[in-house]
Length: 145
Image 1: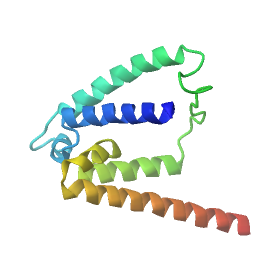
Image 2: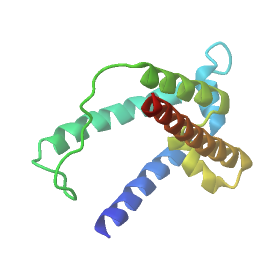
Image 3: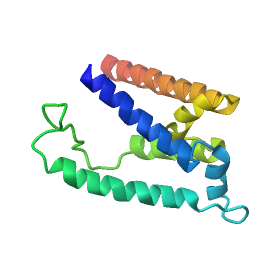
């Protein structure tokens, strides 16, 4: 129960930060990408601040023997760039540029009572489901041969 409550509180803090910084507003994101028009650099400052906090946080947390609520750290071990990673990053970036939402801003925006975040969220879930189905079909085809 402690892990669930802690996860909820961390998510609430993150979502609150996203809303306060204006990153739940797709117009701010789209204006960041509009360099020749109504460019808004605030996203760069939010990302820069997040990188500073993350860098300090990683130094402090990884200096411990284990996390507060787990037996050990679950850090990624792969360091290579493959087609799946690059393709996913490209699809993410294209979707972010079109919709002005990423999961970090789109999910907190669901609470704002507008239809755009709902459409984004449904499309995100559909994309996740499509990838799962494609991976299942691909693994079945690979196992059949």
